[in-house]
Length: 217
Image (cartoon, rainbow, N blue to C red; front, top):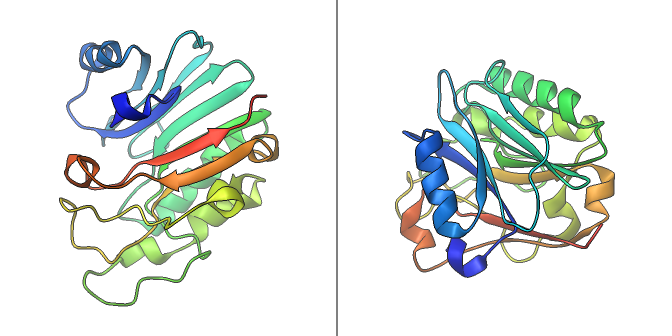
């Protein structure tokens, strides 16, 4: 899927068992360069950049988060890949508040990842196949928005925004748990946001990937 779509930037989460050598092997196979942020308690995250784009400043946030955040600067844009706490709405809210405070005032910022929360923009699942638990708490997404970040799906989402489950995922009710959140200057550049579906996507992961297309800065 990554070879077919050939994105310029990739934000990855749930990299269980990945170290810098393994992420470099993956990046090399795609013709990209990687920055990995390891996790003390959870799972690593990463950002991949395709040349001729140049990866500038790199940050690995491994504290205040159950998982981690990897941030890289590419030209005027800072891309942050993160994964919020799945089991505690309170901790997830604290993580979102802290990330928003750290990054929301840096100009062109795009925060991407598995936020493990509904936004309140779409109705909560109601079929009862699997309890959504704390994921129905919208405070984490609200914390990003209150800091001035924009849910890019609201700006240019096309088709269904549901990112879970895939055929190998837990039997959740269909939900949107994965987000692109951008500063207003990034939101103004958005052409399209969509969820990729079908083929190997349905068995490669328990989440479907999101793709965003931005106009040139």
